[in-house]
Length: 245
Length: 273
Image (cartoon, rainbow over all chains, first blue to last red; front, side):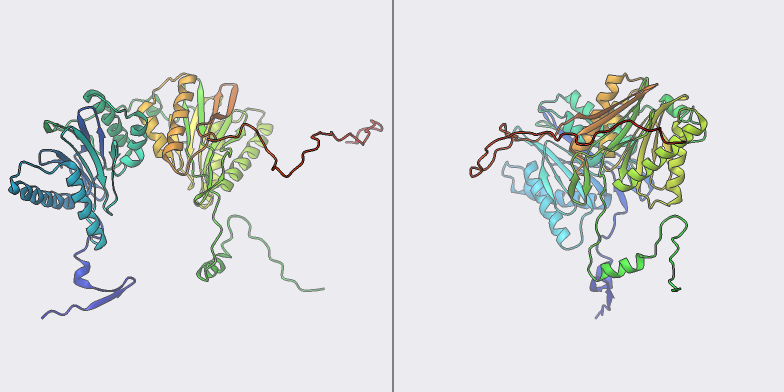
């Protein structure tokens, strides 16, 4: 028989054991994910870094994964919670396949499932510390949605998580159009990722772009963006203003 | 002779004497008045011939817009202007103060003010108040040594940059700059880019809004374009102007100018020196 000694703290009486089981803060985190709808489907971009606090611990984490035939999931936030979500979705897809009825879960259904999971965990004060981006194409219909760690979910033509909210959204709101071609879409995403690379301290210059169309998902090989650091003002910033910095 | 204890004010800086009493009052449930902040997107950029400064025009008091069309680009010297973000009173007071100090300095030296002079005066003041003077500034100007653009943070640190943004809308504006800035922009390209960055702040940040103010400073010349762009006009404006209620009988509308009653005669000598 185990006795749990209740510990009193500001929030009332809780069990010491129960406390250590809840997610209180994230440890290994991924930074922003940016995604847009384009002519043939969905384009999603994210870098491959996993930060452990202020250290860049992992540089080869794939934060975008295909779910079934019709969906693509990208995540920012705690990496271990992302892996847990992938397991849940594996189980979901397996059970769906077992019906063997010729129907398969589309992006709308997966998005709904994830919203329920995230919201229920938040209600138990034990959230999955992620912001998820769910995109897909089924029967010619493009779908792009987002779920946050507290269960806020919505659908839009372009989404961004984390720092992308502040840096990429303004660019997307200005320059997104209804039928972007593949090249234009990639250029737009690269523009956003470049600004994030300059201004987000946890971003690294190694990114992947995933394409989701009716035919299926392709995740590109990792590559890096060209950056420009040769402004004349950077080489000698205080010329003419000696004494300042 | 009555013995009244005279309270000598402290020699300078903030007096924290009332903090304890304020804490006690908030504990009893009194809501402290909030500050008029300037939410804000302010930007500056160096182009081929000088500096362009830009700012939005919304001043917020918590969730309310207190001033729909305030002026955030402050005059420092004929060739130096300063945009201010943070607490409105702090930015006004600090720029006014340094502007006066610069003028006296100009009289004393007989030369045009330099941007680094304004920079040093501002940063010394802000540092000595350890960040309590909540003023985040973008200072730009053209002096004898060329065009300069600096950012000054509330704690007193400064940066010298080719393009800079400050305020709550700084990330939205910075994303436009990082994507589109090039060296050697012409005047029109520069103005267009600054207006785009401010609009990005206006439409994507809740603390910024209303109109775009722009100030172009070149060698020997400055242009203060107040309300350069007004992307948020009133949606419905009545074409009839003001219409009186049905019950009022408008008998006559006539404007009578007041006549000058006082006659001024120039007599006597001028005041003796």
